Image (cartoon, rainbow over the protein chains, first blue to last red):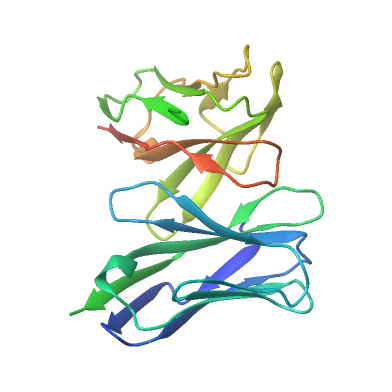
Length: 110
Length: 112
């Protein structure tokens, strides 16, 4: 079964608001990756975090890797309609078997 | 660069039929994999390969076969299609297992 849990499953956001999606693992991860899948599309790599406590930003997106390397978050500020889609986290434990979370599907109200 | 190319994009099968989903990558990646995506289930690993001639089972391998005769190609075979195999299938590649994954555009399969 899945080792990586992702919450919430669905996120309905008013345009302009902020939101956060969370990813939690039962085991320590060597790295965590985030992907975005637009409706009808395929997952596309966004970012990879490797270091404990690491924070990376991509414009309005902020990614964090927890100190214990068991959790991660994606925070989006000032949500836009272009942010619609499903965001997946994927964690690689020390054996490098990447495990995907179930994803957070984001819809935006204009 | 084409990246990861998979065909067909859409397919309807009858129960019991067999078929092959083709996948090719032109990035010289050692690691290739097949995932299926079902609503609420995320991406589940079917089979993977760490290099030519080497394949292994993922999380949901039953009903599927793979082979890796070349670095570029990694076809997925459905032996006897069942309605439970109705899904979206993604082929993917990366330089090594655990590294950034590049996905194909997906194959929508319906088994009736």
